[in-house]
Length: 208
Image (cartoon, rainbow, N blue to C red; front, side):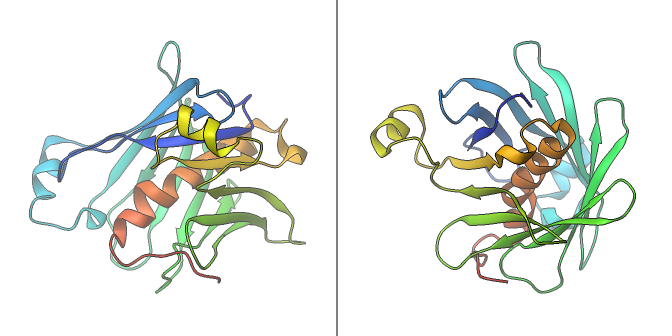
């Protein structure tokens, strides 16, 4: 999966408190590369009927095809004001983590490396779904998430993908850095799976 440089992420339809599931595809060909699946215990699933799900812990497993081998996980504990999400590889080693910002409407957050150094700012933009990954020094753009993908025409995109897809594009300068791409893919998933879900109905990307 991490050989790819452009991804399409599609959410499966679900009901109410059911775990979330996403297909991860090659944005250029439509080939399914893997999936992201929320794994929660029976008690947490029951509690979601009476407690806001963003107050409960969750784990997202990202597995790649064809053998469904575990690539990495995204884990968030329970929290009240500021969430921390850890990204761990298949061997349970910490790759990095995210911290959301207080009182932001854009879902903007900071990505830290395994040594607790701030590494990337994820920033939204007014109008539609469009986020950029910018290094904290420079800044240098490492990738972006949007509802469209460069190099894929509208007709082709409508043929290959559903309307509710969004796309992650990795900058060529980091195309040969699998751990960097792992964190960027995890951050892209976090935008929709966790941060947007926490503020569903009120969150629109804004300039930060």
